[in-house]
Amino acid sequence: MARILTGIQSSGIPHLGNILGAILPAIEMSKSNKNESLFFIADLHSLTTIKNAEKIKHNTYATAAAWLAFGFDTKKNIFYRQSDISEVTELMWILNCFTPYPMLANAHSFKDKSENLSDVNSGLFTYPVLMAADILLYDANKVPVGKDQLQHLEMTRDIAGTFNHLMGETLILPESQVTENFMIVPGVDGRKMSKSYDNTINIFADEKSLKKQILKIVTDSLGLEEPKEPDTCNIFNIYKLIASDDEIENMKKNYLNGGFGYGHAKNALLELILKKFSAERKIYSELMENTEEIELKLKEGSEKAKKIASSVLQRVKNKLGI
Ligand code: ADP
Ligand code: TRP
Image 1 (cartoon, protein in one colour):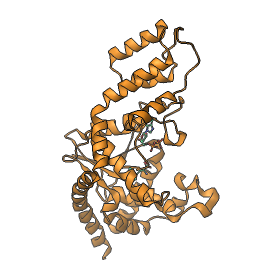
Image 2: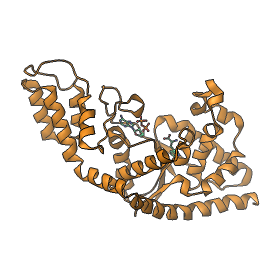
Image 3: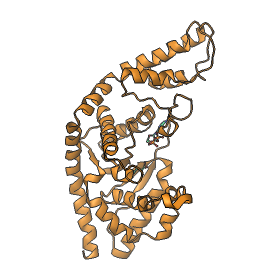
Image 4: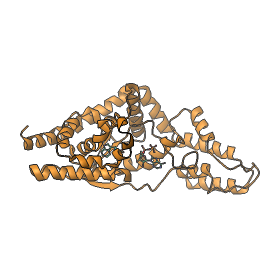
């Protein structure tokens, strides 16, 4: 059985791009009986940039609620909050002492921000070591990540290799599993949907806000009566990612026939999102109104995670005589 582990940045309410591009494929993978999945919310990593308790809490809950709403099975798998397992920071210190300074100085995540060094905190500098600890603490075999995280995975393998070389075989070297995004969900402006572009659709928002986001979708200015090209239309390109084959065909006809305006198309998209995700929206709002429920799930996950973490940490400490 392969142990798959990945950290989820908790930087806000997951948008449609995060859901279709990351959450649903990860949940699908976690269903296999050949895998045991450990998914955690990387709240300690978010401390490098966020310094607001309410925000950190809210982001953690919103992220967890989205995964739970889409049916992530927390009985079969392990779902936890990084900061609940204090062993991770202890292991991080130990790994720091096996990490050459130049390796960290060469990390893209640091280099990209190093022009203005007075704005860089040490947490940002040692971010890859915390990530190595996240992975090595659980004997993870496979780590699904986006391409931007590959260098961090290489560092993890290097650090584990150095430890094993100096102290004897102790840590498992993980394989990265690149999640090429087969599906890039476009945002309301046609660019990749991303928090950083402020072009997201938040399917968990109340109907009024959701409508507002959908109304912002950029289109050309063809009039109501004119036939329209579906494939170059931002509304259609989002619609087709969630609609059934029949709905897509129908929508295509409406575009090509004319007499169907972009306002109609936006309305159809709104209706589709409300219908398609009605169960998930309901679970999400119930969880966000009752965050103790989320705490309970995370606590159950933390208990399972802690068992693995404490035994691996003990193995490491035994090798070090501490
Ligand atoms: P954002 O770009 O909004 O900051 P993140 O970088 O936090 O999103 O991405 C979290 C996960 O969601 C990653 O696995 C990423 O590949 C996936 N993802 C983000 N945006 C999209 C998108 N528009 N289409 C498909 N997947 C996406
Ligand atoms: N740094 C990762 C990101 O930005 C999140 C993360 C933290 C992670 N710890 C991890 C991913 C461990 C995989 C394994 O997306």
